[in-house]
Amino acid sequence: MEQRDFAGRTVLITGAGGGVGRSLVAIFESRSAELILCDQSAEAIAGFNAKARSVFNLLDRRQTAAAAAEIVESYGVPDVLVNNAGWTRAETMDALDTERLGAEIDLNLTGVMTFTDNILKAMVARGSGSVVFISSVNALLHFGNPAYAAAKAGINAYARAIAVEYGKHGIRANSVCPGSIRTPAWDHRLQRDAAIPGKLSRLYPLGRIVETSEVAEAVAFLASSRASGITGVALPVDAGLTAGNRPFIDEILG
Image: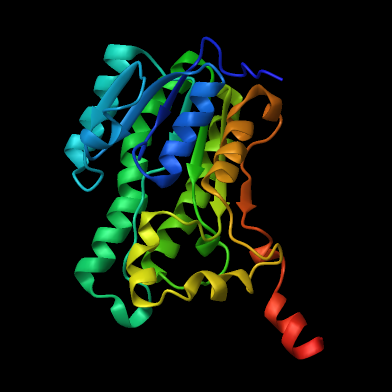
């Protein structure tokens, strides 16, 4: 059955050229949205069919705020904002130093909030809007990447703040918390240990990690009018990872 959930509506996606970003572009395009695509690389989003494109670096606060203001001024207020852009590399506490800590918090939290602020104010003035953040299971339980995890926990708190304070203005805000996803972000790990996919699968109750398309499905649902009564939630899309400890069941109880 053809779905046209977003016909006549504008959807803004950050990090649109990445692994999850491409699945987000595909699902919203298939559901008739007009797309505004953002990335730090013009090449990453050059091949898509889009209403508009914007290139900026979330680590540059002035550039980020200016990009958001320009989008609103030039293309109007988007109906949906999907904050997808993010990155991590400091995988354990021992890997953290002041520079890495600052960069990961700035990129995954401060930059996201800076970009959202101008869009959000315009949504409030209009009286409607849906914001969906790509967070992480790392925001819910500890699976490493401590600075990234702290930033994503902040994102979940920010989404709740928007939901509670701006719900009366017709704004909904939710977070999707993916588990492990096979994207280029995993390349450095696989180069170190090609057996990682097999090791991962035993941790997940479904016996596999999630696909980018499954994350995109959840985002599209939360962004749509079908989720009109849902706001302020952090939804795990994680093949059951946060539901419980499968190795404990298998190896200790089983």
